Image 1 (cartoon, rainbow, N blue to C red):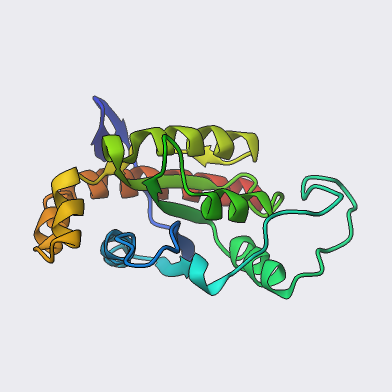
Image 2 (tube, helix red, strand yellow):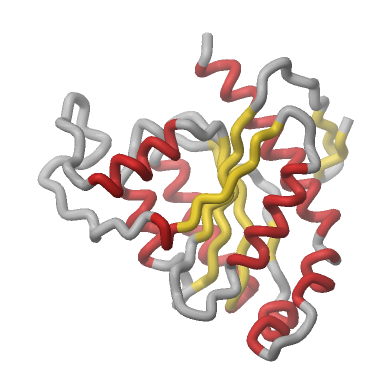
Length: 208
């Protein structure tokens, strides 16, 4: 049993693996996001029956969404962009997600929001967690992403990880980032427990 905010969640072992994708939500030069993404990826890989993988938006250079029909439109034809199809296939193959996001002007980066907007049914009924950094430790970007996740029928978990500004500045100053991230291990594992519980519950429900 795992204590979360005074409550307890019973985590049971699954016979089959669950796939959790960690999405790097920034593509800028000199980005910090790779470091917390790799850190949370390794924390996930410590868990049993979990296939944790990295999805880097640099590997999916999608155009801004410009299609006449939205992805939520039933019966729409597949989008013609190969990179969008590859991205969609990765989302479809995932059971849950950790979004690693900076905060730009009170919200998430446009490249991350655009990547979300290209897809709809493949996001549905899957759990999402968030690791953030930046102004206010990225909390406002996470709040916007939670609302987006709800709209696309995802289940955003309550727990999240917010990287302190001191750790972010250590990156830009060539300092010790790993030490700052390691101090967040407890918070990360609370979030992962929460994410895996919801991922297992939703995967079971989807497969009925």
